[in-house]
Image (cartoon, rainbow, N blue to C red; front, side):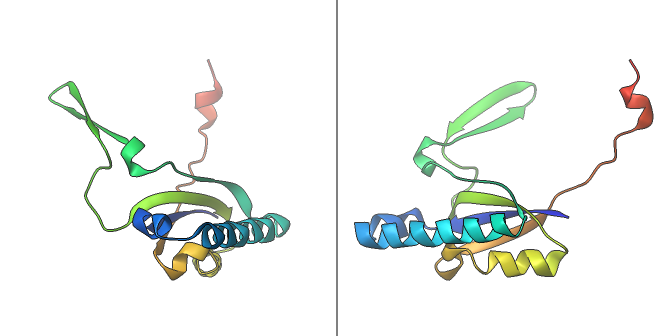
Length: 124
């Protein structure tokens, strides 16, 4: 099964860290990524730019409305993700607990829908 591990933390936490602390955290992320890659569980991942660079798009009454920033005001912001292959939810939760930001923020574990391709959809 594939799971998305969504990494939430307060952006202010990083701006309050020393360069050495930031470097140490990135080393921990690198070690975690190497660990799940070696185990054949890493599918994708990435760090997001700050929320100040985000845009939210909504369509209401046929009109597109774009606003600056994230969808909702929260104390923690979505900062990155891992797409992983896990045996089950317990395995995905175990991986999430090893993500460095789990100590200061939270990791949301979400299973992905698996949709079977319809045989007739391949026909032109």
